[in-house]
View 1 (cartoon, helix red, strand yellow):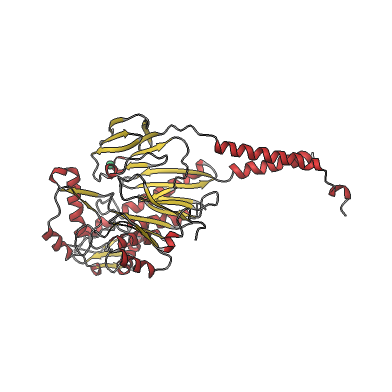
View 2 (spheres, protein in one colour; view 1 turned 90 degrees about the horizontal axis):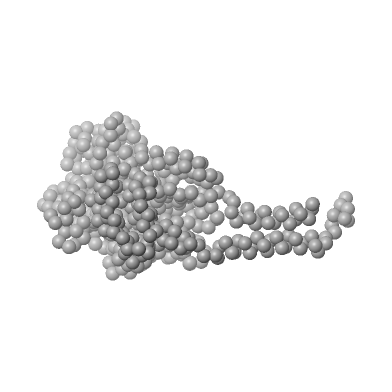
Length: 347
Length: 131
Ligand SMILES: [Zn+2]
């Protein structure tokens, strides 16, 4: 009997070591707000995974509605409501809106005014021209430059008044509006992942390409997260793959959302100085702990020359970045390079 | 006090576990090394429901008129699949590169349509792609 146990035990241990432990589950959801949410998590069984995933999707849906600038919802004051009430009255809003807008102010300062959530008036002109141009490519036009210049006069973030005690936000300038496109996805992803950290030890989320990891993979190895190749005609679908252990990776690029006027593509990330699509790089990618910060910084870096971006990144703790330049060269910080898959140890 | 009997070890006591370990090892290596069936296909889903599966070895050109409204044209050429045409507002699906690697996907979010390459093992594929 003792002998039999001796024989069976290691066999059992080996099999257990190979196949047991939490199982990897994944789910891809397309929500009604044009965002694909991919979720991977290690859990004890399918039902447990599905339950938790459902609760996170519900939370995600709430953020979506709160941060929606295009539609209003019955019984809910959201950013669309805030925009409609510009110059009229303060709007009582959910704390999650106040938190996002306060973060928006921080990001404005951090990026030297490059990332401005109060620039909705300018961004709306581009959004409308792009939407019309995509629906009818033959008649696609650029937004009127006089209209852009006029709109740019109504983008002062100091005119966005947050009142924590009253729980309200008021846009003082009737012609201004908020557009949180550069920060909302990352910010919501960060908040939801903090919730998910209480549910799973090991998970990874992509919200419309905004990646945030929790812990490491179920087998103890780091998550492998790739950066999309901005050259959509290139054979290689990605330009780099990094190892993450609980951090976030967010990318901004000119290759996804754009429309074409007279054969020239115009993408959606607008330079606040030129009031036209930024033309410094094809893509920027930021690696750091906080997904909201990663989202904001990847946009900020996209809106400045590589050298300025490197200075900004160097001034911040725990932030690494990658750039794909206009001539498709890849440049990155040393810290980013040290995370590349195949570059030995993580960190 | 320990009896001397318990400390005695016979070589045969080691033999059986050793063989067991070896056998388990060989089985594991075999299951990892043996070739998986490698027939790549484009799985097309709308709101999570599979509406079509196209083998990537055969060129194809399919127009999907979705019941909830909206149109996507999915094309298979030279082992790659892409969305060549759609009437969605953002055109992100049309702008997306042609895909051919297992695990890659193209999403048309406004239509809830996802094209995913499936089949075989996704060796070396990243867990997620930041884009
Ligand atoms: Zn589409």
